[in-house]
Length: 211
Image (cartoon, rainbow, N blue to C red):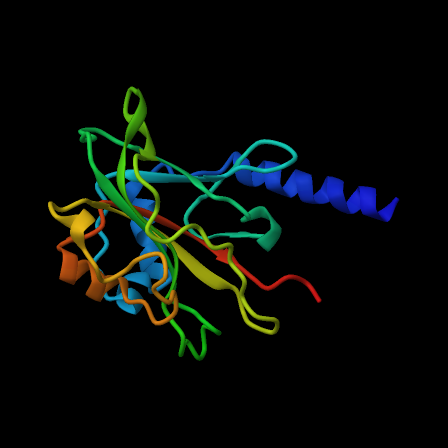
């Protein structure tokens, strides 16, 4: 009975999360500033579009992130799906990156950043007024890695960023599928390959699994 109740409670909480997503650029920017993200990853953040990140679930509908929401780790298996919304969405291509600046702990991030996803050649695959689903037309450079904050750590921030893809990006050799994911620096990488500032973003918090 307890297991059924716990499952029902979790499903209820996740259903509430599904109904929450980013709808206001100013609120997203404020959430980034409040979480000290631009300073911690050394990137200015002044988004032009809203980024929709959704995690498919085995039971129930997908979970759509709202900037700063905390999710249970088992809801982040992924891989996530992406869409952007706003006016003047271009045809791409776009680069999407996800980093954790809090590894192994927010108080002592000596392994940060961890690269949880990096992919280029994202293009609108389905459009509706003011919204475009993004699909990558080539394999990701770094496939999605589910959050795994270590036991005893506070919740980590997992930051999703979208960039306009510069010419020649597909020829970059700084990161490939075998490059270590630890000690990544999205700002330095972006400067080296010409990403510029992110045009959209959101983030979530994930804590370790309960003991």
